[in-house]
Image 1: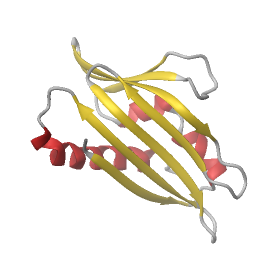
Image 2 (image 1 turned 45 degrees about the vertical axis):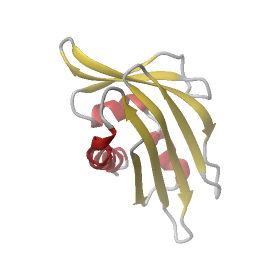
Image 3 (image 1 turned 135 degrees about the horizontal axis):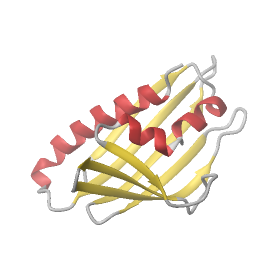
Length: 145
């Protein structure tokens, strides 16, 4: 599985950044041709299910995810959300961890491993590079002041 690792620093505290990082509908808006469909009533919690649908017209693929760890940050303590990808086309997992920095602000660690069914493993480096680009851009946009 291609491994994607991104580290991003922000001036927001973990408590301020958390709602920005876990607004699943805003995630979809950051990825071209993607929208997010929330299947579970709010607020987000372990067990929340949502789908990122990417494509045009009838040519789409779904990245269906379930929140399996939901640990919002508290003052001075890190937060962690873990998603299991449970779709027919996309499998794997993703984690977003946010840690406080001693001088203020926070550091976000985005870790993801994904498999696109039907894609040969020889393309893993290309998938990882595209993921780092897309998810890195999405992360920066989600944390804009």
